[in-house]
Length: 381
Image (cartoon, rainbow, N blue to C red; front, side, top):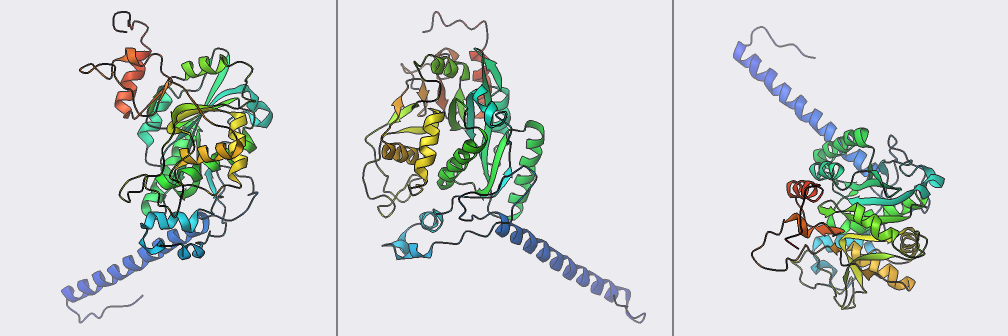
């Protein structure tokens, strides 16, 4: 590009070349960063379409960006609200996002989906590879039990921008090649976006798996027994998934937490009522295909609420149905009957359906202990 004079000293020529190299590297990095950011703006935002085009795992849509709802700034005390709550107001109209990873044939097609008795819907985050791997090896394995099929899907979002987003999305793509069990959409995967994740899945279910009989909807840090779940669901009278069922750890007579430093903070500007309708803890609950469709249909007319389990309660209340309690669903953790006993004694976990808040190593241990054919609980319980 240019020549250095032979009269220059060797040190001067070296200095000039190094300076030129730094300029080139800086310019190249800026181009790459701009390219990545531009792509994220193109594909990670929402467009208000009621019927987005069909998706597959290898195609990325360039949908228009979902713009902020600036009328939210007129809400009383808006500028005094935490930024995370302001973003809820700005973007809660956004409901459709590009799909990055899909498994459209997971249920065997629309007609074949009736053969899926229990579909495991596990909420996960992009970076939680270790949790997904342990679940695949333990309770979330796909199998035939009591003559019916159990299938598995992880539902995941993405990250807003930057190199973390690129790396995590690529990792999920590699994971998908091996297991083919991930649904991923290009929205920012945060706590206050869990409701978005849930509605996106329900939309997917209506298209690709409408006749699956029952669903377990839960987190990726729970210990569960799908055998016990199938036994319970098969014991229901006259309900093969075509009638209402929503069972879990029932929560009643509670309302929004008004403390801004709390994870579950909901200001009066977002929810005026001091009482939520009955709902089940979001760590895990069972519902029928019928009820999943009711909630999805109600979601079209009910404004998204950032706490997903409460939102399901709102949708059911509006539809005139409600959740029920099941003593085997322990989303608050397992309460020991006496002090000083081992809370990880497998005999206390044999008959549960689900227990929340398990780290991967302890979950792996518990699964193998509970399923040990030589486990003897006759003297302990």
